[in-house]
Figure 1 (tube, rainbow, N blue to C red):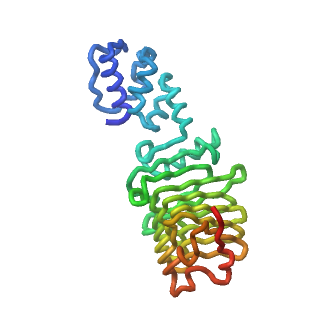
Figure 2 (cartoon, rainbow, N blue to C red):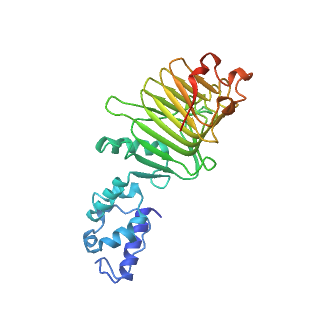
Figure 3 (cartoon, rainbow, N blue to C red):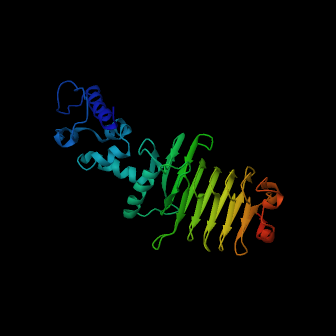
Length: 306
């Protein structure tokens, strides 16, 4: 039974319970399938109290239901507006996939631009989410071009197969937050921060990608707390072309990657918030200890205060 069908049954049941006359029939009908809304007699809706809409009926609707029914049910206009103001989409309750959540977010962003202070929020339930690339074991990243927080249920509960690439556009400055998930199996970077975008990550495990965290570009910034990058084919954390990466948190480590654990070029910086040390967080990478960090530019890896 879909959200709309549940809600309509709930309207009739609760209306009878509260002795509200909604003018359909004496007893609630049994709804057995999809009935086009335009074929409903909708005149009774205006007689349902707003509190009943808000607290008795609205919980049965997901975002998709509200988007479909609000244009023809004026009593739901405010509920739809309330949803838009909360800036929150649940995956998979409202939309079935992360990619669809980001597509809807782009459309909403075109009408009311999200900001670092007021971003869209995607809430991922427990489970594994795939960004499929047919015929390949590894999958491509999703591209993010607006401000969004993507929140999992914990790195041991929520897994995203396929990474995230974020970058500024000519008309917007992007800030992305990723927390409480595992990111795996991406053809390129688990997290890619490009063209001056900024990123914050917390409680992340990034594994089996080409590069764990790849930050590239003069104004690109990434700050990561309690992040683990492991079993990536190339580097754990890469900063290049004038970018800055800041690492903090006792659980932060980069280990067992195919090449370098920490790699930074002469124009970029990797900041380690004390008490972190490069020798303590970058271990068992590549072949031999020299791959834990690139020694020719290791002066660009520095310890800083919080």
